[in-house]
Image 1 (spheres, rainbow, N blue to C red):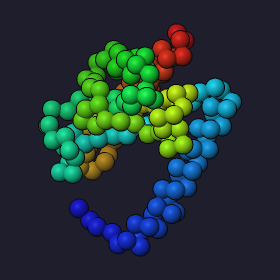
Image 2: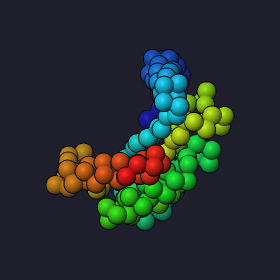
Image 3: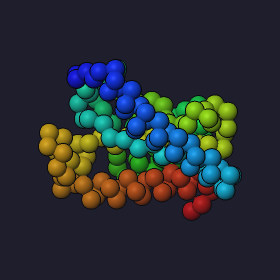
Image 4: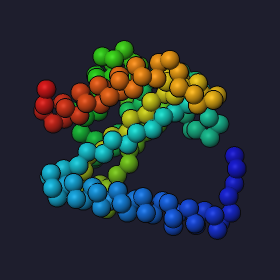
Length: 160
């Protein structure tokens, strides 16, 4: 694992991390003010084989990992996403191999109008993990993820 200098770390925090999180916090605040709530979809991908730095070294990895927060992830959202991804014939686990979800610190644990869930997609579903090139399944995987997310969020919002 490459290391960076303290100066480089501080530069990255100042120029990248802080502006991103300040912008996200402002967007969430505006969304809550305008709509009465905000739903954050914290989306990532993960390797098919655990990286050495990952705490969960279980090689049996699902297609989709749904990360939750006990305060900010309504059960209906997590359950709706799990059900929707299973309908797409994808294997799904809650909080495994990754757990948690992004919530701006201003709202963390204090404002239940801010809802958040993490959606992790296993990279082997849509690309050659050695090269990053899209696989033949890229478009189908993208469509399945889009349908599942729409269905899962619709359940939270009580929409068909």
